[in-house]
Image 1 (tube, rainbow, N blue to C red):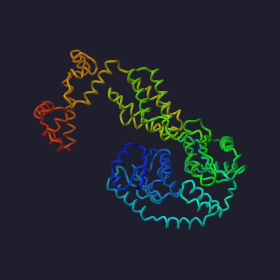
Image 2 (image 1 turned 60 degrees about the vertical axis):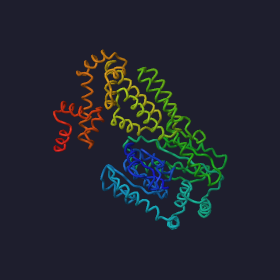
Image 3 (image 1 turned 30 degrees about the vertical axis):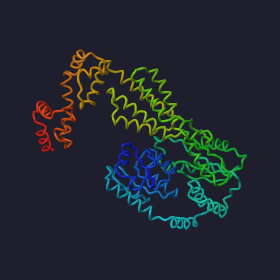
Image 4 (image 1 turned 180 degrees about the horizontal axis):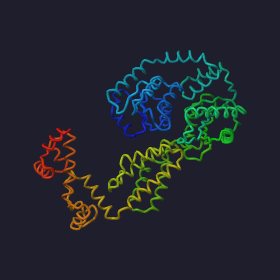
Length: 529
């Protein structure tokens, strides 16, 4: 099976792409989804897929950035770009960098299928023998330092046999005289909203950080530095007495004193020999991801990280439901206590990963929305998208907690407005909107809010200026109009869809309401369009 990753900053687009093609029938397995450029890059480095289908414009790194990093990493991954804009310059750059295709939203099934099939053909044509031969030819023309950088990059990615790597190290006289290797990942804490940090400025900053870190590292050990996206990978060759934690602290202090920036550092597991470099790198990435939960300017050792979720999806769901129950009770103190429990569950479930944390936080808001919809409090798609967009800029878990608490406070305020009558009326209307297809009665609806049917009839007319039967008919007729104009269903089918068992009764009621029979109304509507 060919592995593919799908990425877009709109969850609904990812859902649509999953359904658009019969991926399994094409011999393709979807192994991951990403909403940001960094999330996609981490997934690519983790899964090393053969194919990526991604939006070209995403928060926290563009598709072009990811494609460049794929090229630098030497992966054989094929990339298909999708975009909401038919921008020639984007398309030109994407194709120049080796993208298979550039498709404009909304994506047509045939065009996507054609692009995927072309990617599969390219993958089939590329033989390992030709790839290795070309890479060796290029490799031999590079200077020693560049060759070393590429060699260690391939060791990190697991893209070279150990015997070959050991031979290359001997040939290049790498100076790795010590027994142990430890990898550190350095990441500057930059405010993404600060327009001072363009791509050019970031490159200069990373260059300065690399020079500083290399000078400090070579005082007591050996090694090499590589750029990985907006991060710097430091591969340290050292003896057992070397304190990597002290080196990390020194790098952080120098960055703050001389470069006026804050660094976070992930320290991987110490390994014996070059065979452990890839493992040390992976554990360093895991450790750095944990920086989402700690203060800026901190180093995190892998030994402090637990890779597996300590909280199950079921336990997380229970915490979300508990907060939802406090909304219905309109108890602010209970809500705040339930939120604290929820935050602990999110942290335990996400295992230090920023991406998992944001997914869990957004999932919390959508589950609240589903629960609130049942009582007539609607968080529409636009509002949910706004929540999703806002959270993409968060760099610390403290921001996530503050935001979720703000959303919870807003929900409480919304429930508290309008008094009891307004809340009961909202509940009734929501119930009718969801059950108008059924044989619902005044008595049945009155029981939903524990009200006497006679009192309910008076209550309903007072607040809606029509009786219950008139309101129900109004809802059914509006739905019937939609079905007449937007579908090809037969009249008797539409009658059933809007709650009438008798098509004749439905037609009579429709004519009484709109002055025309359903079929006449449809014909007239078609002529106008």
